[in-house]
Image (cartoon, rainbow, N blue to C red; front, side, top):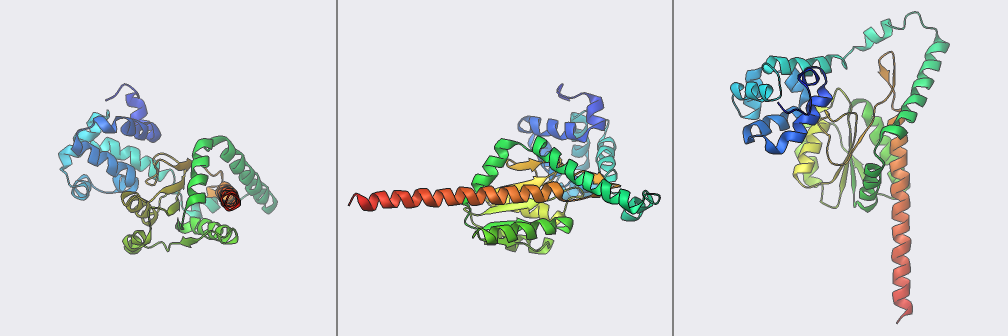
Length: 288
């Protein structure tokens, strides 16, 4: 195991483990690289499937999964899987249980807590998102021929908002229906001068994850809005942040703010590009 993280960190901090896997990826044997890629793309399957099922899905042997686990300081695969299960469990509290937790809270206090949570989300967004990556995302969107929008569950609302904004700005966009069986057909419609915006938070959508993975493999630029480096859609242009919550309910306050920012800035960039292009053409005409 690398000295970059301690054994305790590997066993208890999935973000530290994922960061170490990514940092050492290039030096891993090919079989271990395959496993590393799979653990990044399908964390829920690592948490829930048996070692035999995972080995079959990856195209390797169970013993290689054990070797991968031990390489990063775990006693075996079961210990690695426990880390992923704990991570999944901590983000999978049912709605009924959440309601039970606020049985004694009055309506006014619920509203106050929700609005405070929304404000906190927006404040944290400004502090946590990488400014350079936001600039890169804006440039990508401004120059895109078509913007494709992927999301599922609560992030369908984000797709709709993006499409509403882009339509108003005169930018072509298409929202994809969350359907795992249709992912290949969707990606076939995309072109290298298009951009895919994908939004996914824990627990991650398989359809959204598959869309991003296949789009990247096809050379389609992707802008991803997600929560951690553990996310299966994490990549070069990923805007990482977390939504605050009240009693386990997460709003979309930060995400909607970020969507509005990206659309406005992309629209401004595109407007400036048109003005520059027009000025260049006028200079060329005047010189004749």
